[in-house]
Amino acid sequence: MTDVESFAQAINSDTRLIWIETPTNPMLNLIDIKAICKLAKSAGILVCVDNTFASPYLQTPLDLGADIVMHSCTKYLGGHSDVVMGALIVNDEQVANQLQFIQNAVGAIPGPQDCFLMLRGIKTLHLRVQRSCENANKIAHFLKNHPKVNKVYYPGFKTHPGHQIAVEQMNDFGGMVSFDLKEDTAKSAFAIMRSTKLFLLAESLGGVESLIGHPATMTHASIPQMDRHKIGLTDSLIRLSVGVEDVDDLLSDLKQALDA
Image (tube, rainbow, N blue to C red; front, side, top):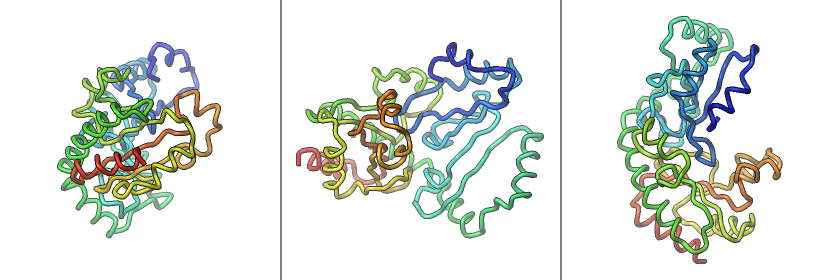
């Protein structure tokens, strides 16, 4: 989807929905929402954007032409790793009525405590995400200059292939950073993840606490190694969800883990 012209060739008469995730997990690729929506609209196709990594603070896909925006609210919207919820956001009454009918029919209704926790989290969304972005920027630059690190995937770098798209459709570059190691083995990644004290080992993201994860054996374990390697998801790739802690503490934690 990063190549709009090539992606257009995959659309046919059976296509009813284009589902975008941007930035992508865990490689942080950027997709031009406006360009995809323009392409879809000319063919009468709906576009849904998974906006979980960006959150509404950084990106508003409805303004870029999307029909549906999806959030794993468990992540940035909730922000405290204590609620499981999802949301679909639309600005078309007909689509809203269709989704509401399905929700009512299958009983996909969050409980009152979940709603309370989500409302609480949204109140501090702007503060949390901004701090995560600031911390992630410093951590990405630290990793880029570390001798044991091979590649750093972070849209804030001008060398990132999607940097210009991020500048145009996002307010900042997000709190997610991925990197792999020159010693490209899962064993090397495990050694680092065992050594961190502040970065907790977990699959989730978007909370106030910083998390570290290994996509090859966690979130993307079901994908064959050959397919993972095709997109750059190496055995040593580590994904960071940068939280709101003091950035010097986070940098010290990563430094000691890498040096060890």
